[in-house]
Amino acid sequence: MIKRQLTIDSSHNLLLSNLPYKTGQKLTVIIVAEEEQQQRCQQWKNFFKQLQANPVAQTLTDDDIAAEIDAYRNENRH
Image (cartoon, rainbow, N blue to C red; front, side):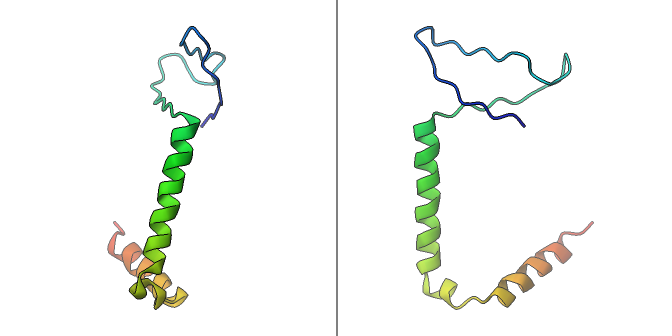
């Protein structure tokens, strides 16, 4: 994975060069504006705060969470 931060200039073009991938290799490129990324991150933080404030969530213990993870893993083994 390569992460690069770039600033768009007046040409509104984006050129990626010297990438460490083979010719013909298929890639997925995701472009996100920094402000959008920060906004999405804040939305997730707010969601998790609301979730943790739920009275049911406050009664969960680390052992409860570990047991649920183990049950999920055992259920999804192939």
